[in-house]
Length: 291
Ligand code: GDP
Image: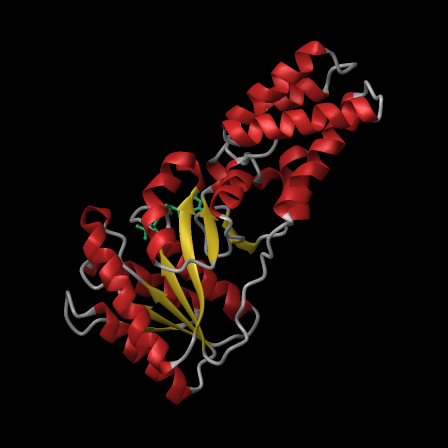
């Protein structure tokens, strides 16, 4: 696992913890390291203050204690929200939303595989009906995952009708989990949000929606989050999926995004392969990031 986490522990942090004793420079170094790892200015300040008072309270000068306290603080904050996916309905319907390019198609393929590994039956609705190439790309992933797919009958078909057909098939064939891919064209934000609302309205008449997952690219950090705000405002997002954490030195974004949105991270993408998606466990993540 260790070799797959280049996002862990920035060199700034590593240098700091390798020192013999905590001194005045430590706090500046810690601040720089947390900013570099994309914790964001507010969270960085809060964490540095918190750790500083803990170090004073425990009267320690050992950087190893600080490292442990940082890991515990991170885990504690990450654990405030519940990362469990709610998939007990039958069928469990999951809408996947996000801006183009964040890794939405890949995530759906990986998620289908992840669920197949647990012997769940899965059907995917290709409701991003304007990008023919995207439908094909999705179909390839879904096939590799051993899941089924409902494609649009023609390019530009009403996305809500594809979603409807997917849920219908799940119900008649007893398929356990429905994943619905949706469009991510930011340039038509108003239209896109209307399209998502319509999909939700239509599907909710058939069965309750279990999860609305927003896919975010961890390498774009705070900018990516600004782009995705419309989804949070309008799409009723219940969970976040962070992709591309493998190539990112921005592990701090994980905590920043959860605190800023108040929405739990439920899945994490750590590579381009079909098996590179995992559930989110605060303890494991804190351990990987801080050491
Ligand atoms: P979409 O436009 O949101 O559907 O994005 P795609 O699923 O087509 O992915 C865009 C690019 O990101 C592709 O090159 C993927 O291989 C890559 N990608 C997706 N998820 C991950 C990940 O977790 N790690 C890495 N390194 N690359 C990823």
